Length: 345
Image (cartoon, rainbow, N blue to C red; front, side, top):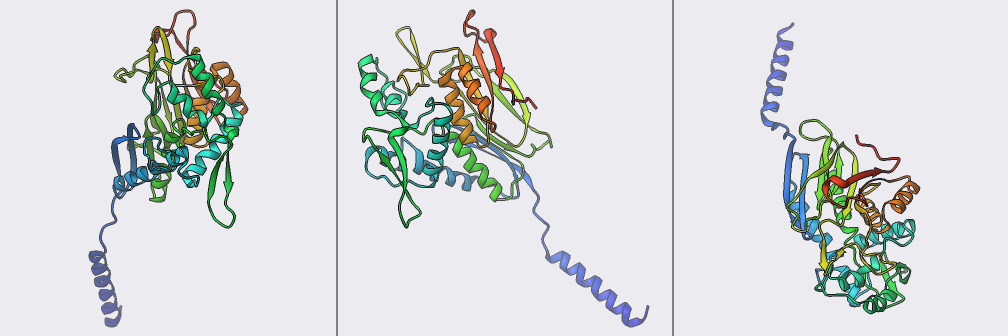
């Protein structure tokens, strides 16, 4: 090697050393856990990321609340229910289209216009009271998804909600938690997260692996009557990934009217809380929003009709927990029934 070549090589080595000193180390990916309360329930989110995204997640929660909350008087849904406005937003349109799809698939068992009945039975904005048959008969004519429609505004990227009956009101409670899971999962993906699990009140979206490089573990709760939520036994544990999952049940949100148990699942076709042996429905589908709506539809239908509905839908599968009609609803008398596409991975 000539002297000139030696000098050039030495200079290049020195340059590389300087560059390495100047360029900072690449930030390391780490698993973050964000927890809190939202929409009257809990959330627990784990994800692998360079940055903690909790502030962005809370901002997304607030934006969603301003769209579909029944308890926020300024939300899009509240303004539509009170007649103050009819213009929708993107979250509302997404919810409406999925609700319409599940309404058709369930033959009307899922219906977002159930709000007047939910309020009548004391599971919405009004206090609980003894409900007379005449009251149900007076409210039921104002329930029915065929009474609403989305109309596109010409020349504008907006839709308005038209009502054929101004007394119609909308309750998105049976679909919104699942939709919010999808929204947070999309936020994580936009921020480069390949491994995450989003759990909002038991509705779950999971992708990739956990911090131990294993599939995510998702527990399905055993449906034992407990309004306090203090009892939490696990019926089964799924080891899975790339899944959108929602569970609906009548073992937490109910009350007694005399000796009559009133569950929060209202059949929009009859106007009454459901009474059958299906205690819990867990549904896997193409989105958590869709799974949430289907799980509610299952709870309205009962396990036989629920299985028929899910078997018709190639996008979905279900895990149902049924009480033995002979021995009652204690934890030893439960059995699980799965649709043909359900797999415990």
